[in-house]
Image: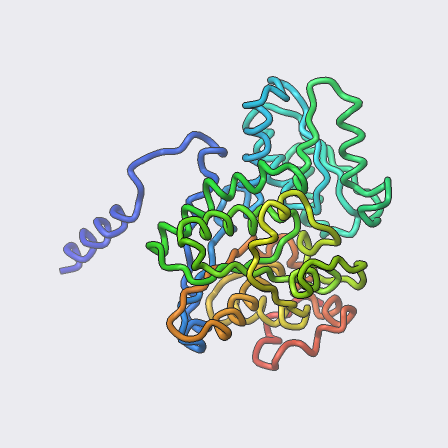
Length: 359
């Protein structure tokens, strides 16, 4: 009997493996699973699904944008073998670019705000990128990390500034990959899609594809953290306010309408403002109830999907993006001292405080 069970187990495991191979790092980007979030789904009577973008080979949804903008530059003849890729990024796009550059033989230079987690900076350097942390200043300031990246690229031969915020090859990468994957994985049954936006590429690319395929029936909402102006922009019908405040989340939120978001913003159906208290609580809730170790931006998306599902009502299917894992932020997110410094220690119910294991 034991031998039979072992044989059956081996057969079952073998069936779970694909018979095809992929071409290196770049070939492994995409085709991530949709994860059914059982607890939240049961509470709402909806099917809430998270696109597991942390399973991309570079660990985040930004692998798609990184590959998309570099491939676009190659196809247009803007970069040749041995060239240099320069970008201004809060972290994950830079990590994706560093991986893509290593795989394709390019040099990689990353300008980033010095407020980003040390885990991200260390990883970028370990991947061979030339990392240049600079003071975090508004986009309007000439010393903003995006402008410094652009200006440096202009001083080099055979170099590109990938311009992730306004290069619409970013949104196109999601239009041709993430959107079709979600549509196929849900068998065309997706009533709502929601995620936060930094560059706007994911929301615009996925949103455009799902709107087209559903004949406009899929509702596309934007989720926004504190310190961002996009919630008020959508809610007010297009009024752009001054940016104020800040959030613990990294890589999302915005003070302007980027070119990527601009390709779709008029078709966004609604928006939700998600507080840091809700996001941090969901980081711990997902670990406790689903075994998912996700970052704060991913948790914000899950909160937003839950609230969207509550609004749409039972029987609907809502999809969001699990941008990355918590590994790049663990020294903050699971630190009692850090949580207290941000006034977030009270956001956790007692049953979840056991996961804050770092002093």
